[in-house]
Amino acid sequence: MKKTVKRLLVILLSLLTVTGSSGVSVYAEETITLKDELESCEDAETVSEMKSYKETESISETESTEELEKNNREVKNYSETTTANGKEATCQVDVQSVVEAENIEFEESEIVLNDEHSRTFMKVNFTPENVTDTNIEYISSNPDAVIVEGSDIIAVGVGTAVITGKTANGKTATCNVTVEESYPYGTRDGVQYELSGNTAKVVGCVGNLAEYIELVIPESVVFNGKEYVVTSIGDNAFTGYQSLFFMTSIHIPASVVSIGEYIFEMFIGSDDYFCRDLTTMIMDGDAPEVSTDFFVPHTQMSIRPVDKEITISVPYGAKGYDKFPWTNYKVVYREPEQKLSPTENLKAVSAGKQKVKLTWSAVEGAEGYLIYGQKNGQYGYVGMTTKGTVYTDVTALDTDYNFYWVFPYVRDGNGKMLPGGCKKYVYAKGVCPAVTNLKAASGAGQVKLTWKASAGAEGYLIYGKTATGKYEYKGMTTKGTTYVHKSASKTEYNFYWVFPYHKDAKGKMIVGGTPKYVYGKAR
Image (cartoon, rainbow, N blue to C red; front, side, top):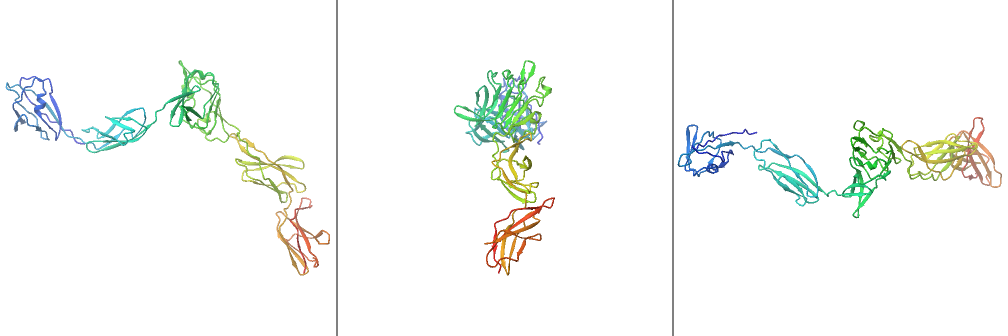
């Protein structure tokens, strides 16, 4: 920072009283006409000559019409005969060093105005603070939206502009200005809205709302043929309306994504009140963002709803209600308005010893499935799954049929299961499934049978017949998936069936299913 240097110039005009200009300030390197300064003094007469002194040493003699250039010389005293009769006056001149701006910045870098010719003062901060020349030249990048008058920015139309401020020595600063449509207001059914663009904000109530026991905020409102989506509720929107004393519930649509602070705060006289009969807030979507709370704190109200006495009714599956301030109140999740579709394409197949495998098509929206069954004439819960559309009952009857129903379900916000339907039941026994890939190969004096193992099988029974013979037991194996019929007919085809089996706790053989027969001849 440059140090300010002061110099004193004294001009003596004897016996002349000066009541006008008695002093002047100039900056180093600046030029003034001293005679003009003197002639501005009241009662001053024509200046005839001018003499200069520095201390006691004469600098030079100058004519009264010549400009005196001020520089960094220490000029202390200056005397001058100004009139013919020798009258004198004094004039003090302060000569200061020039301090230039090193940096400037606007106090605000972002400003939002509306298009109703609003104006804002542009405050500029200089570095250093004692800058000599604080004049700023302002330039708007978009005069159709913003113009500058002096140090005021004035909105003239919707749009954006960059305001640039520039000092005499070329230092600049910028500010982004946005001009939005002005915010008109509209009222529908006693509720006042602030309109902006295509959205509306609830800002208050108008008139007598005593009839509103249940106040419903719509998803949208129409003014002058234009639809506005209701997206927010402003601070203190329902504050101070005695007519809302009897309101028991308020219904807020899913379109509302933000709620201001203390929307239910009332003041009447010196007492504090809230919507005293309010018990329920009905929400249609996820939790909106809330500034603080719906009601002022206990410390600021003599009467306030006790936490948890207000019920917040929210849709099934809605998000965000497990956070403050919603947790201050009783949040109840409603059952889904659309029920789940019933289970379709349900199938049951034997899957091994006391096992039945169930499969079905996925139900949209289901979080899981409940399996119910009937065994030995008793209907009851069998199991559930949340991991797909397959379930295996491992306690199925193997001596009789098991009947099954599968129900899709969702959970509400309180964790309660809400099941859908099931179009039909299916049934199967808990026995070994039929073998697969059964084949017959002709051999010398025999037919060889092979197959793939059946789940849970402890052995296999082989039955067969010839084209003209009778169906009968041919043999069995417990040692794999191969059987050789050594007495097979060479003259006609031999037909074969293979049955897997397992044994129950008493050793009884429980036989499973069989695929289509195969056939072959011995060579």
